[in-house]
Image 1 (cartoon, helix red, strand yellow):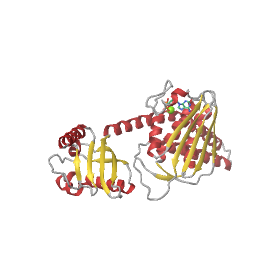
Image 2: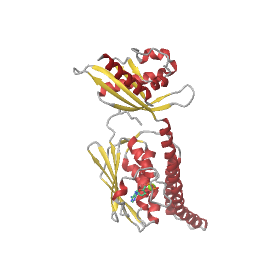
Image 3: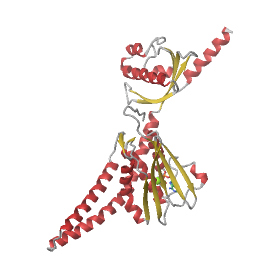
Image 4: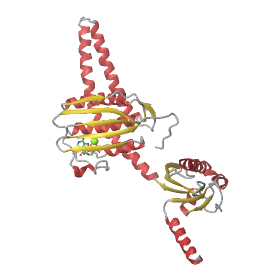
Length: 362
Ligand code: ADP
Ligand code: MG
């Protein structure tokens, strides 16, 4: 019996030490019971008799990791409060080099009487993955911005031509008050377009704010209207007045909507109509982008969102992937339904901001 127990313990130890992820068992009071070798390395606790110690005690052995250890303690607390498996990202600074990002899963365990039994922590180093995602995000953004540039130039040329005409009139002594009104409104239009474009092109860190989606959608549609007109496409809005606000990074959401609308435009080489719907349902805002394009064959739907999956000669196959990613980081979802030669509907669901203290793990 004892032999068998020893043997299985040895197997377990070998197993967790061979794992490339951090594994840590703690008791109900947060004392470390067992950590694998990788876990000890992460906090440089290799030669520390860690067993039975809490993060606060361990921090005295490894002061550099003090903050990171206290963060662990904090997120343990959250896991206990939730009472179920809890997933989050933790950033752990490194003495020599860049901080590492971990995808952490915490599993709180309870006795049958509800008392805290212990907590299991598993952490995977996703630093490289994060970097790759960021690179993809940037390259897609650059390509979208590049494509938009042509549209923006076109959009600005018309009001510029009309302003030039009015200046010519004025110079010839034809003076009418309404010339100024028209010129000013044309200038406002140019300013709007240039501002939108700049906001989009600037590199940004995630910046969550409370926003009304209908305003945001109108801005995006204005930005794409020239491109739509050139392609003989009408963008129609059908918004049920939604007053609810969504916690979001405005630029990222705009990027998503631009991606979706551009795909819709590109799917309708012979023109047609794109309908954008906005409605509210319980604690969610629903958006629909409905096109009358060539659609997507059923067997290809599952490929959507895979990086570099494209059917276009000049496509990047990154637009949808980035869009999925962004919506996911907003705790929302995207679903695509399509019928060949009839059209495609892209549904985006986003949660309504519910209280001031709402936390995000991005
Ligand atoms: P890209 O537009 O660069 O090809 P995306 O990730 O934006 O990359 O889209 C991937 C693929 O999904 C497209 O190449 C196209 O085949 C398909 N797709 C996306 N949206 C639509 C749509 N509205 N209608 C038809 N096909 C679409
Ligand atoms: Mg695209």
